Amino acid sequence: MEQLYVILACIVLGCLAVFQLALAAGAPIGRFAWGGQHDVLPRKLRIGSVVSILLYALFGYAALAQSGLVPVLVSQSFTAVFMWVLTAYFTVGVAMNAISRSKAERFVMTPVALVLALLFLLLSLG
Image 1 (spheres, rainbow, N blue to C red):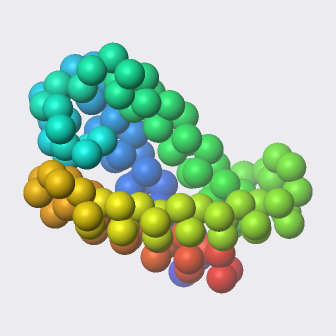
Image 2: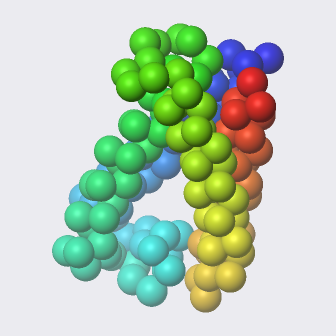
């Protein structure tokens, strides 16, 4: 089951990376992210989207390392703690998306954050 969880987590993170790439490129879908205040993101938020892509790659690698599918870069104990930090991060993301002023962000990104929080919880419990 753990391999299924990590594959699903990486698929969701990959989809989010593609979404953030579209935002960074100027796609008019900003109502789904960053508070939903801009259809096309301003420069600072576009940079934030690029940083998000890099973070999603790191998060995916951590999930893969936790599952033993790629080498652990630092240590197994660091990776295990990092997975719990990511679980908390995505849990906070559920709340933050749920209170967004953007209806689109609330209804799309809240469930996405919830799925990631649950998948990272399951992976953390290992």
